[in-house]
Length: 310
Image (cartoon, rainbow, N blue to C red; front, side, top):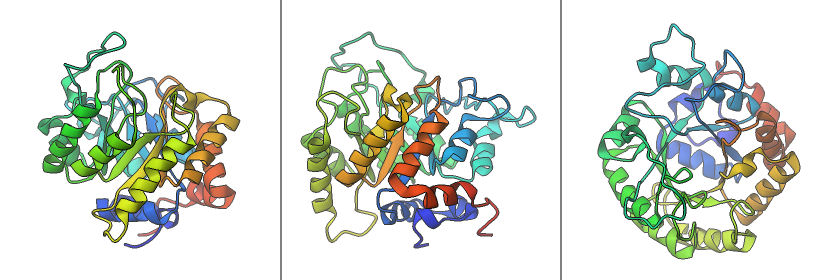
């Protein structure tokens, strides 16, 4: 499959391999949206999952946060669907690639806030990586929630672990400090993650964390573009700009400004977070989509039937 993701029909999303997905994102030239949500929270609207709402607002990829892979539960799924089938049901229902956050906890990290303990089903390990494979996730994101104590050193070690136990795409990086007293992202951190074997480098979007602006992102993008020269898609590294602080629930002007700044710097896809009680505001996903790809592509992605492509 050599289509741009922008040209995918419904069944293309379900049948795409990880490398095809990676190539389709690259070919879409900075116009792809990954929306994050917490599926264990009460849904934004009754009788719907947060994933369905985000997909309807224009999300191309869905990232689940705070989902325990040992006991996965997605609120809003019809009551006649057993919990063991929740992930399969939502994948087919939204007809979009899905991924999950797994957190590389560093018990030795120097914290700048109280540490929040999380369940083992949310922590990256050989067991959770294998479960992510079995459930059919197209990608994992090695990152940290606020106060969980995820360090860049632990992320680097987890990348190497993931290469051994997960067949999908590996996204890695920090959207914010995760409670650890260290830089969120810089050139040296980016180089370490690339050397460890990532598919997608997660970096903060401009203006979303202190002391990280367009020039900081551009320096990292330029380094990655140089690294990618002459390589095939398996070896290339994509860049995802993450709006993963509470600014994902900002006004639409701020959303557009962050998205356009990231696109101008050269990122391949845009993440938008889940700070509004576990979901991204639908109007902000829509505003981001219109800003980075225009109404033609935005409406096409919204309107194209899941049955197309059969």
